[in-house]
Length: 242
Image (cartoon, rainbow, N blue to C red; front, side):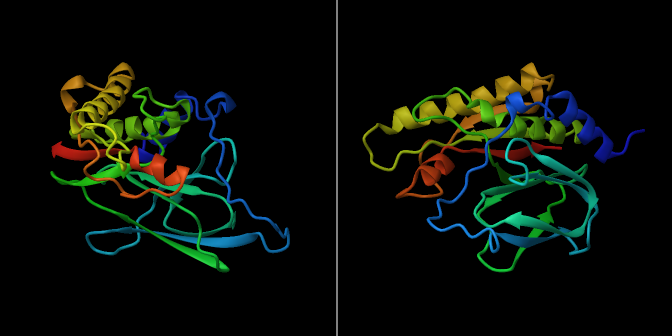
């Protein structure tokens, strides 16, 4: 039997991660004076089992190291990487028996950015954001650059075949210019778009439920930047059965 790492890598390659056509373009901070001598820094990554704080060897997927496509590291528990402090990074992990993990961040502006990854053993009621599944404005169509994150979610479900998920859509609605009914409808449609993608990719429809949270749980209630607006338009997953 293939190891969980091999299964994940195989799924990601089959779904086109090596193709620049579906690649990402990394967001970077706009710095007036970029000094090549100081733009590099280190990121220390450590992966632990959240239930016992033990180190855990797993695969780590990093968006931001390569401007055009994610980079996968196999069997990692404690490592240090060279990064560029002005780039936006997403780190995600997929492992059998654990909840999908993703964190999106700008590195701390210091010599070493510390990033601790705590993987939660699967249990009913566990909920997390799936970073980098994005929608434009009022639209419910999934933005093409979301494909790597969607493929990670497929890999998670393939590695954990007993998991059933509620896919929760969220919208950006800080100004109250739309009705709550509009926001709720849009969030349900966004969640359903993700469910439809997963089903079309071979996931059993009986394992998925779409739900809309409207604009009731925005990460940034008063967004000031495009990045914050985009972060409010997010997808969560919640385990509803094992």
